[in-house]
Image: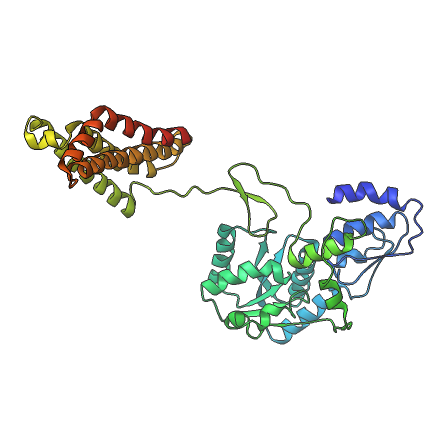
Length: 401
């Protein structure tokens, strides 16, 4: 459900609602949208994790409450910590949401008041591409600031940190906001070299016995009354009950949140394997063509006549077509090319096998122990019947295409 649909639905649902208060949400941006609507009906919205300072504006969010302190206090503590450590030349990393925007804005302002400077400010998109991650990593790698303050969540930072690990970047002093200072990646051995020594402030935690097991045992469902469970699974595990199929020639990104143009992968004529296949194809065609010339030149000799020259020429033709079919599998594909290569190879290969089958039957009849029976079988299995057998064995392949 989009926020436009929520805005249209909430006034209708809450016009005569007996609800005393609404609990949620965790992220600051959607919390601000919901608090703005609920404030029109004087219905309190109590958030358990939305810390953005923008939500403290009572003129905009008159009924908003929260059980966590505002980022104003966290920013004040972070500025005091970096100035105490004499880290006055820093960089910042955030995301596109209100939490990062207002947090970094307040931190930069207070740091400048203390005589510090922000060298760079990187913003991680919601679904960053490989090129965007590379560009941000290049900016961080070329920076002279070795202290980086980050306002983001664990999920938003994961791909960026993986890019930094790939580059084997170390020696950065990370200062974390409360959103990821207790993240599991900080205790993952893979991230130790990058994130070792990270500092930040965290809220005191509380454990509710049995709550985790209870929530994990409830599965998402489109049934009424399961909206909270669906939202919980969507936020925690990236699940979604409202998926849309990507258009043709597009596929979803890693997070399944948007469609990306499909990338064509094919064997090029300029690649090593493509060149080898072309050379082998030409060699095969030249060999079969040479045999065809030899058979034509000696077509009146007894050996060629005994070898059934008509079937032999047909066999050599099918072999040349089989060699040439490999060229259709090289180069950029197209609709007609994909259809032609399947049909051409299938027919030519079956034709080749049919010719070998006929020649094998002829040899079998010729070398039977009973000479008279063999001669009779050869007369019955004459050239016309041989051509008929080739046609009958090849026709089903043509029909199947």
